[in-house]
Length: 101
Ligand SMILES: [Zn+2]
Image 1 (cartoon, rainbow, N blue to C red):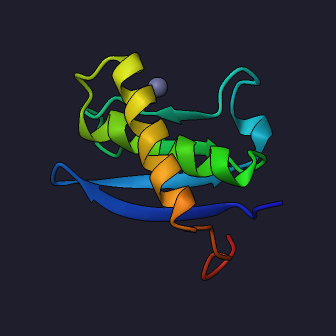
Image 2 (cartoon, rainbow, N blue to C red; image 1 turned 45 degrees about the horizontal axis):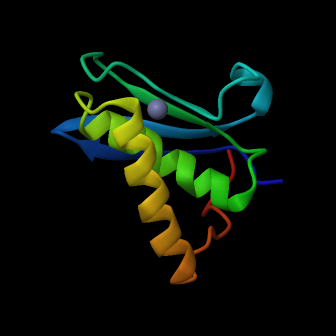
Image 3 (cartoon, rainbow, N blue to C red; image 1 turned 120 degrees about the vertical axis):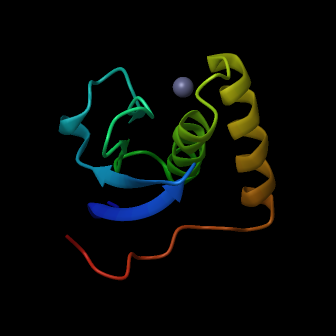
């Protein structure tokens, strides 16, 4: 099981937190969530129980929502799937986080 984890990145000049969280912290029907980018301290949440490739896909998917909130769900889905496939085939994989929270 991937541990809980939290990082901060800059998206469109705003600090975003990306949190890998316990599955119970998100609705059962969802893999991840992205705040409205107009929020003061927006966050992205992704379930840590996802399979490794689904975790990568979900992080990419939610980050695309954050960068380009005007895109349709379908466009985000397709874009994230293609980027995930490319990175996965190039053998990019998650390493252990630097520190657990
Ligand atoms: Zn989406």
